[in-house]
Structure formats: C-alpha cells, structure tokens
Length: 423
Ligand SMILES: Cc1cc2nc3c(=O)[nH]c(=O)nc-3n(C[C@H](O)[C@H](O)[C@H](O)COP(=O)(O)OP(=O)(O)OC[C@H]3O[C@@H](n4cnc5c(N)ncnc54)[C@H](O)[C@@H]3O)c2cc1C
Image 1 (cartoon, rainbow, N blue to C red):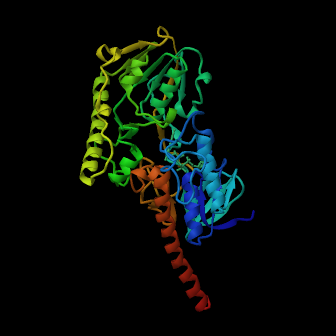
Image 2 (cartoon, helix red, strand yellow; image 1 turned 90 degrees about the vertical axis):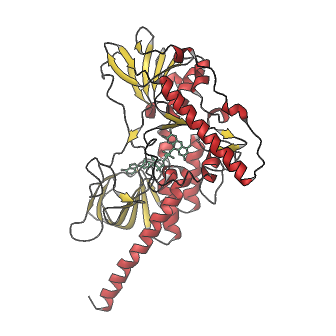
Image 3 (cartoon, protein in one colour; image 1 turned 120 degrees about the vertical axis):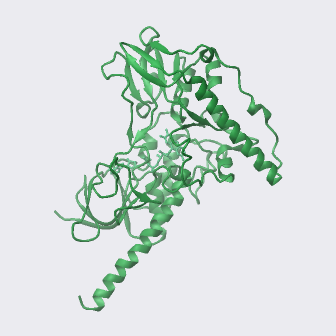
C-alpha cells in the first residue's frame, strides 16, 4: 500500500485545527489537516440546538475576519460559529481533508517522525499536531446505576426540551452548560431540579462592558496556571437570550428547585449534599470580587463608565435554600430524566506515543509535547486561561507553528549537509 508523505499533519479541524493551519500556511510550512467530520463538527453536532457563543462576536473570533452579520456585542448561534470557521478556512486556503479519521499514530522506531493510520490509508508525517479538542469524551459520575428506572443523558447528547420524555428533569452541574440547559427546560415549562456545586459567577456585563472585556483588561485571560483553590470550580456564564448574568437565586424565583451536590442514590431516591448555601455563597463572593476588581480598574484608569450598584444586590434566599431538599424520590417527584452536565475527559487512545503521564494526561510545555515532533493545541490551560477558547487558541497555535517552522530548519540543514557531502 502506498504511504502518503506529509510534513506536518494536523488532526482535527475545529477552531484549533483551523488556527494551526492559518499559522502554518503563513509561515510556509507544508501541512495537511484531517477532520473525521466537517470543519467545526463539534459546534455543528456536538452541542444543543439553541447554543450561542459565550463570548460576544467582537471577542470570540480570529483576527482578520469579523462576524459581518452579527452585532459586535451579540452572540452568534452555534451554526454561525461553525460557518465562521469554515469561512476562515477558505480565507486562508487551509488544506483540510474532511471525512477522514486518524485511528492510530506511532513513532517511527528508527527515524524521526510518525506512522499515521487513517480511515483513508497510511501517512508518514514528520510532525503531528493533535487538535482534537478540549472536550472529547463525556463524563458521567458513577452515582446512579445504568439500570435505574430513569433516563440518564449527558449534556453532550442534549439537543432541546422536546427530546426528553415528559416529566421533571434533574440537571446535575451548574457550569455554563448545566445552567443554560436548566434555564431552557424551565422556560419550556418543565419542572426542573438543578444540582449546584462549587462555582464562580461573572457579571455578563458590568458598567457597560462584557465580562470578556473585563477578563482581558484585568489580564485574567493571560493567567498561566489555574488558581489552586478554584481549578476544579466551574464557571457559569451565558450568552443565551441576548446574554445575561447567571443568578441561581433568580432561577429559583422562577420556579426551579436548587439542590446541593448530587451525592448518592439508593432504591430510586437520590441524595444531595447539604452544601447548597455554601456553594451559592461562594458563587456570590466570586461575583463580588469580579465587581471589586472592575471598580478598582475604572478608578485607577479614570474611566467614565456609569456605576451599577444593582449588580451587587443579592436576591432573598429562595425556599429551596432555607429548607433544602436533601433527598428526592425520583418517581414520586415525576423525574423522568437525569441530565448530567458534568464535563468531559480526554480520549487520546489513537495517539500511541510517549507524551502522556500515568493518568493519561498530555505532557507538554505550551503545546510542545514530551515526544519530539508531537504537539497539542486547544487544551485547557495549554499556555493560559484562554487556551481552550476561540481567541486564545489563535495565540497558542502561533507559538506551536513557530516551533515547527524553527525545528524544520534543522532537518533542512541536515539534508543539505548530507547532499553537500554526497551522502
Ligand atoms: C457547550 C460548549 C460551549 C462552548 N462555547 C464556547 C464559546 O462560546 N466560546 C469559546 O471560545 N469557547 C467555547 N467553548 C469551548 C471551546 O471553544 C469549544 O469546545 C471548541 O469546540 C474547541 O475547539 P477545538 O478546535 O479545540 O476542538 P473541537 O471543536 O472539539 O474540534 C476537534 C475536531 O477534531 C475532530 N477529531 C477528533 N478526533 C479526530 C480523529 N481521530 N481524526 C480526525 N478528526 C478528529 C473532531 O471531529 C472535531 O471537529 C464551548 C465548549 C462547550 C462544550
């Protein structure tokens, strides 16, 4: 079988793969991008129907191409985001081959580079860039047995309220996905229980600036490592319905029942930790801290942005907080579905190289892996807080492309030196 030769192979054509291709192209590095689905497939089919970008159009994009049909402060829908990346790929003439899955990558035993197996035949690649996403395999904690008499679904499989069987829904997880899906189900007339764990809250807008702007001017997108106290804490933000600050107490005012962390299950009854008040207090404290930092920035820089004291008003405790639900008989409460918005883990089974620790976590520095010639882009905290987000991956991809462009000069020199020596 003929083996195709590719100097740099990028696996995945989401935003990370497209950014990688844009930078490799502008540095003159020959490359090919393989995508098992379509460009930005996860934005197209891996998210719920009504999802909009979490960041406004002026922010969540690459340099050199705007969302020309979306107001800069608006939030493009997921299909529009996917179209944006397809447009960007066309704009930079990215060499993307869709419908081809990479199934295995191994190191050559006796020379630099990698043997790559794909659904369309083998490839020999000098460099491989894994751009297969920060959120690969949905994770459901082992709390409720598979055979329990209730439908269990991960947020990755959720599309819209009509998809769910009639009845109440328990949404577990209060990050951006859980908070938005719970809100959508409530608006659709469902009875909703939302299991709220530790979280941070941001103002959607404060003093006429979006939180993306605040994180930018305060240098927070550029933080290089997560705060050890908050690294396992989820963040609740939403661009839905024009964008609004997620406030769990307001959801409770509208009829949602908030509960603490989902802790156990036995005989049809689910148990919640008595931590709801603590978790809400923590979220509120994080919001106040954001407001304090924004106020300090405004004062220090003499900005003329109107005060917004109402953002500091915490609504009264709802009944589900003063009298928390610690156990729920699912059948008795009419709960037909548990929707787990509990995040994702990596799935790098196809990448059989020496670039992972014992727990399967990629080992790298700013995307340059422990295995020479292998790179990662798009992972959370690859170089900074913004790494897994649209604007952040652009900068990481530039660094990785530059590393490849520099490194290939050593190969080029070696080949020229051999040729000069007549070898
Ligand atoms: C619900 C949700 C909402 C989000 N909203 C925002 C937002 O508003 N703004 C923002 O900046 N970020 C957002 N993110 C975070 C992040 O931007 C997205 O997860 C984004 O999809 C990541 O892009 P990526 O290119 O790194 O990975 P992905 O989009 O996951 O792309 C990876 C690509 O690789 C392909 N692939 C995987 N394995 C293989 C293989 N073996 N062979 C070939 N192809 C393969 C996949 O088909 C996919 O197209 C959101 C994430 C989630 C989960």
